[in-house]
Image (cartoon, rainbow, N blue to C red; front, side, top):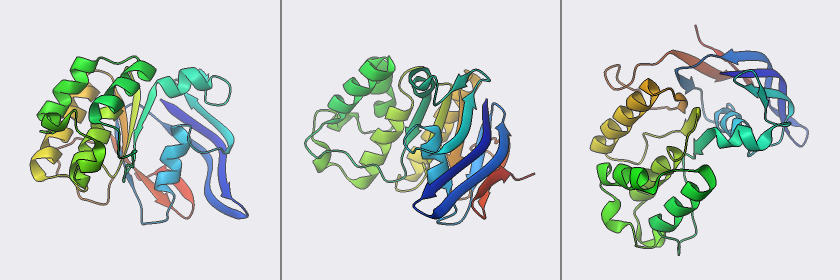
Length: 210
């Protein structure tokens, strides 16, 4: 699915992430690590939001630096603490993402209904609770035809019922060929998600936690 070769991310003189080599196969991967260990930076590099040195390949043929448009079209990302302009509505965001990702508005609306935020579809985001905003951001991550979905702390902020719904959506999406990298400090019960394996962020590197 994803292959990393000599990948490094620096913030000035500080080396934040250093991955000599890593290959992540298709599946549902749990990314673990302490605060500041590089999890979010790692996800944002894959999503094309952070520059870096080295190479990240998708499906053995798409290099994020050489085929950036095709690469990012197949990779969706949801932030841990999403921020949107307060005057936008969920409708605005869904329409924008569907246009840029080639998604189906009706599918996105159905997901919002499952998470019980569709009633506020036409309301400005500024009127939403933090949990509602988080749910909208998660729905946006499923729009289009991604091969990989990156979810940064998807289970925080939202209520227990929404956690169960999101886990079910992840499991169903994986059965349909979508892979996931999910960062989470929160323990995920085995009956909620079945992980292919675990990734560990530690000492500025990301590696498989066998």
